[in-house]
Amino acid sequence: MNNNYIAGEWVEGSSINRNINPSDTNDVVGEYARASAHQAEQAVDAAHAAQPRWARMTAEQRADALDRIGTEVLARKDELGYLLAREEGKTLAEGIGEATRAGRVFKFFAGEALRLSGERLASIRPGVEAEVRREPEGVVGIITPWNFPIAIPAWKIAPALAYGNAVVFKPADLVPGSAWALAEIIVRAGQLPAGVFNLVMGAGSQVGEVLARHPKVHAVSFTGSTQTGRAVGIACMSRGAKVQLEMGGKNPLVVLNDAHLEQAVEVAVQGAFFSTGQRCTASSRLIVEEALHDRFVAAVVERLAALKVDNALKAGTDIGPVVSASQLQQNCDYIDIAQREGGRLLAGGERIERQTPGHYLTPALIVDTENHMRINREEVFGPVASVLRARDYEHALELANDTEFGLSSGICTASLKHASDFKARSTAGMVMVNVPTAGVDYNAPFGGRKGSSYGAREQGPYAREFYTAIKTTYTQA
Ligand code: NAD
Image 1 (tube, rainbow, N blue to C red):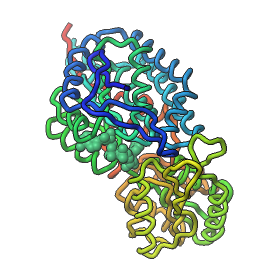
Image 2: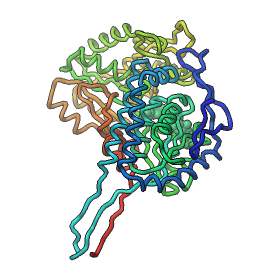
Image 3: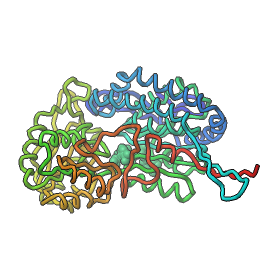
Image 4: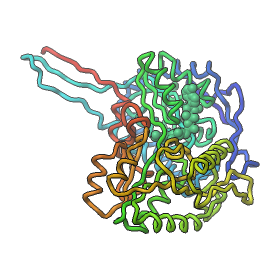
C-alpha cells in the first residue's frame, strides 16, 4: 500500500484508491491510501509547525535539497515516465519527457532559491532606509489535476519549497502513482525536516476542501477545471488567503493563407491531438483562412489517418487512450453535440478496440463549425478539434479572441506583420507563432487571462510572486 505522508510519517488512509491503467483496464497500477479530511487537517497543522524552521534554514540548504530531488528524478526519468504513461495514458515518450521536465524544474528552482532578492529604495525622508523584502507565505496548499501528474506538482512544489514555504500536496484522485513516487523522492532525497512537505491523496470534496478552507493554509495553488477553480478561489478569498488558479482553455490556432502548409499541419496536429488532446493548452479551435481551408483540412485528415492510437506503453503508439471511461463519454457527447449543431465529423471520433481493453478514441476533426456552437465555447479536454473558416486575418483574430478563455493562442503565417500584430492583439496569456499552442518552457512564465487563470503567473522566476510575500521596512539609523 502506498500511504500518505503526514508530519514526517507514512500513514494509512481512510479508504483505498485502486489506480487503473487506461490502456488496459485489467491492469491495476497500484493501491493508494485516500486521506480523510481529518488527516488533511493534521497535515496542515504539521506544515504550520514546521515552516518557520524551514524558512530559517539557509538558501543554500534549501537549494541543495531541491537539487538532490531534481537529480534523483532525472536519474529515474525512464521508470517515472513509464509509471506516468501507465496510469495516465500519454505515450511512453511523452511520459519520459514529462518526468524529465519535472527533474529540470527542481534543478531550476534550486538556483532560484539562491537568487531571491529584495530591493533598496531611496527614502523620501532624510536618514531613513527603505527596503523591500520577500518572505515565505507560510503554508501552501497545492491541488493538481490528472493530466500532468508529475510536471504540474513539480512546478508548484519546487518554488514553494525554494522560497521557504511548507507544503500540503493533494494530487488528483485518478493519478496517485506519479504523485506518490515524486513525494517519496522529495521526502527521501530532499531530507526535509518533518512537516515541511506533506502528501494527502484523496477526493477533492474531502481533502481539497480542507486546503481551500483551513485558516492555517496561507496560499493555495490550484490547477484544474474552471468550475472547481472558481469554487476554490471563492473559498480562499472569503478567508483572505492568497490564491492562484490555472483552469481550462479553448485555445485557437489561426492558420493564414501564407502559412507553410506542412508546418501548419504539424503544429495543428501536435497541438490539438498529442497527449490525447488532454492539455489545457491544446489547440481545440483551428481557424483557417478561406483560400487555404480545404487544402489544410485535407492534409490534416491525411496526417490523422497515419497516427497510431494504441496502448500508451507500446512502441510506435502516437496517441494513447483517454484517461477514463467518464472522460471518454464526455468526448463522445461533445462530438454528438457538435454534429447536432451543424458541424461535420470529417475524421475520427470512433471508439476503437485494441489488444488490451482501454478507453481508445480516434482523433476527431469537425469541420463547418461556427464560433457560437458549444463545441467552440466549452472545453472538451480530449482528442477533438473543430475547424472554423475565416474570411481574412482580421476575421480570424476576432474569432480567436471571441472566447471566455484566454490561456494559449497560436498563428501559423509567413507574414511578420501578421505575426507581430497577433502577438500584440491576442487576448491569451501565451501566444505562439509557428509553434504548437501546447508546449512551453519551464523557465518562462506560464498562465492565461480571462476565464483561464487567476492570480500570479507560474514557472520561471515569476513564480516568486505567488510563493513570497512582500514586506516593506523603514529604518532610521
Ligand atoms: P478538476 O477540477 O476536476 O480537479 C482538479 C483538482 O481539484 C483535483 O485534485 C481534484 O481532486 C480537486 N478538487 C475537486 N473538487 C474540489 C473541491 N471542492 N475543493 C478542492 N479541490 C477539489 O480537474 P481535472 O479533471 O483533474 O483536470 C482537468 C482540468 O484541468 C481541465 O479543465 C484542464 O484545462 C485543467 N488544466 C489546466 C491547466 C492550466 O495550467 N491552466 C493545466 C492542466 C489542466
